[in-house]
Amino acid sequence: MLKQNINILIVEDNALDARLIKEYLLDNKGVYYNISHTESLTDAFKVLQNSNIDIILLDLSLPDSAWPITLHRIVDSSPHIPVIVLTGFDDEERALSSIQKGAQDYLIKNDLTPTLLTRTVRHAMERHRLKMLFEEASANVKESEHRLRNIINTNPDGMVVVNNSGIVRFVNPAMEKLLDTKKESLVGRSFDYWYCLRESTDSMDGELNIERDGKSLYIEVRTSPIKWAEEDACLITFRDITARRYAERRMRLAAKVMESTLDGIFITDKDFLIIEINRAFTDITGFAYSEVKGKMMDSMAAGDYEVSRYREIMANVRETGFYQGEVWNRRKSGEVYAAWLTISTIKDDGGRAVNYAGVFTDITQRKLVEEHLKKMAHYDVLTGLPNRTLFNDRLEHAIAESIRDHGKLALLFIDLDRFKPINDTLGHDIGDIVLTEIADRIKRCVRGSDTVARLGGDEFAVILEDLTNEHDAVAVAAKILEAIGRPLYPQGHECSVGASIGISIYPEHGLTAHDLLKNADIAMYAVKESGRNGYRVYQG
Image (cartoon, rainbow, N blue to C red):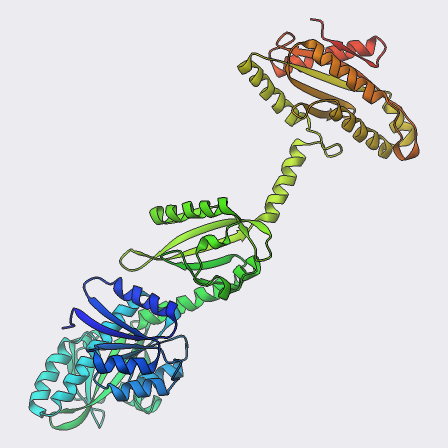
C-alpha cells in the first residue's frame, strides 16, 4: 500500500519548471507531498545524506553535471530510492537508456500534467517496492514464490513468469485480461512474446505493439530476473500504455496545428502567466518567447484602460471559463492593433482549471475596411459630407432633441444655379472640383455642431439646431448665398454659380423630417420661380 506522506526531492535548476512541478504535486488530494528542492547535484547529495527521501524527480542537465553522468551518480549513491527522470528532451533512445540505467520512468516536461505526474510517482514507488520485495524474496525460494504469487496476482499490470527456455510458468489475472485469454492456454507453453523481446532488444525491456479484437495496443514491457520453483526465470511485466500513446500522438498533432495556424496562440498557467506561445504569436506581436515567458497576459494590452479590461476578462474567465471579444494590444514596435481574442479553460481530470488557452487574430485591417464601408454607406464620396441616409438620421435626431428641449431648428434646402453649364462646357472633372469647393464654403458658414449634407447632384442641405428664431436661419442663408456666389477658379477656369435656398422651421413648418424637407423644397422652388439666386422661408 502506498504511503500517504511522501518525501520528494526535486533536482531541477530551472526555477519556473520547479515551481510548476511543485504546483502539480501539491494540487493532488489524498496524498501529502513533503517537497525538497535543489538546483545542483552537489546539493542533492547533501539532502539525501541528511533527509529521508522516498523518491527523486531528476533533471538530467544540471550546472554541475550532465547526461548520462547525472543519472548514474544518483542511482549509484541511492539504489534504494526510485528515480523519475524529468527532462525537456523528447528522445526515445535517451528514454530507453535512462530506464536501463535504473530510472523508473522518463517524463517530458512539455507533456506534463498533474494527473500524469502524480500517477507516475505512485507507479514508480510501487514498482520499486515490488523490486525490493522481489530481491528480498529471492533469498528464500519457497517463501519468495509464495510472496511473489500474491504480489503478482494483485498487481494491476499484466505479469508472466517465463523460465530461461521461454516456457510460461505463471500468469496473473491482469495478463489474462490484457490478452483476453485464460492462463491455462499459456502456462506450460512457449511464450511467443518472449522470443519477440529477445530478438528486438538486448535488455528485453521496451515496447510491444500487439493486435487484439482488431485494435492495436501499445504495451510497455519490463523484465526482472527471479527464482521460481528453484529454477532461474524472468518476471515480465506488461503495462497497457495505449491511452498514453494516443494522448501523446494527439499532443504532437495539436503542437503541429498550433505551429501551423496563422492565429496567435498562447498558453498560461492558472495564474494567467504565459508559459507557451506559437510562431504566429511572434509574427503578430513581434515578441519572442523569451520576452513574454512568465509575464501576465495583460502585458500585451495597449494602455492602462486595456490593462483594466484584461483584468476584468481574467476575472470573467475564472468565473465562466470562457471569453470572446475585441481587445486592443500593442506590438513590440509600439504599434497599437485590434485583436479578436478567445480564451478557454483547460481543466485536469478533477475538473479544476490548470491552464488557459488564448487564441487571437489581428483584425486591424478588417476594422479599417469596415470603417471605410461604413463611411461609404453614410458619406458622399466626392465631398466627404453626410449623404441623404445620414442626413435623414441626423434630422430625426435633431427633431427629437428639439422636442426634449422645447427648442427650434431650421432646415435649409440648397439647389445650385447655373451649375449644369459648367459640366456641359468644362466637363465633369471641373464640375466635381466646383462641387467640392461649394461644399467647403457652406461648411465654413455654419457651426461645428450643425450638419451640412449633399443630397445628390447639385443639391445640399443644412440642419441648424438650437435656434432662437427664424431670423437666425435667414442670416445663415444669406451668408451661404454670399459665399457660394463668389467666383471660382477650378484649374484656371473662371466660373461662378448661384443658389436657391428654401428654409423651413421646426415646429412652425412641420413636426416630422418629411414635412420639414418637403416645405423647404417648396420654398426653394419659390425662389427658382422668382428669378433664382436667393432664399425664402416657407410660407404655409
